[in-house]
Length: 379
Image 1 (tube, rainbow, N blue to C red):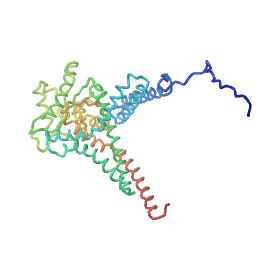
Image 2: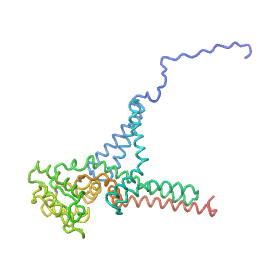
Image 3: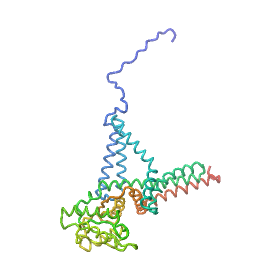
Image 4: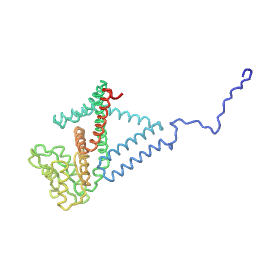
């Protein structure tokens, strides 16, 4: 009101009970976000441990391992926001990871070119180069389809995305299972085998080549380690049939190779009928059963890129055998590993059929909506 004197503004003094709100980076460790990180780590680690105890050769272990890695990455990022000293190493690690992802197509193409120069232009050697080109061409094709603005090309782009998403997720799970097998599989899972089985590979001019020689060397090493602990107990099985262009069976050539390196002939068994990984396992099981070994501890030895698929097959066939990887040339691993990934895709057809069914239903509904809009029945 006019004439009424104004009182001077008196700023309220903070109460001794009043506390200023702390910025987020000063939150104590027991607030919900860190607890969520710890709970996620404990959950995925516990499930992975339980799954490995049941059977560490199943693909579900790869999925759980990926979830554990994701939870670990989230926890590290959260810790970096709380602890300044961690920001630089975590930031550099994140940058290196994304740089690797960006360079992956070019690294694959480089590896493919090196492989072709060293191993020749066989169709099986083109997978790495084709994968690198596909990682570049597929996003470009999707962008071109979306840019047209046509509802039908958008449908094609969406179906391409679904297919790539399925293949990408399966690839990551297979990669995770490869890590699980390298960390917890092999001789860690079967430290004292009664039988060491070496899987064959093609002979070169009737002789053992570098790839097969590496497998035999790994088998001999495992056999000698166990022979030193239990003399006269472990057996060495050479598994591999005779191809149309091979003068002798792979098993016979492998046995001669091992004998020349000091393995007593009487400690070697020959399984010379198999032509595939599945028959390697089944015929070896029959051979051991004929010798009265109904439940032996068996270690399979094969190339590093082949170990995961062999372990999956052994699990599918119900034999509790572990698989140890043998060394493989660096330029050969990636292409061969991708070939194994494609093979395992064919083993797990139900998920592919389920995803295809979902994508098909989506495509039909989308097509009906588009046709309805174009004919005026909708909208």
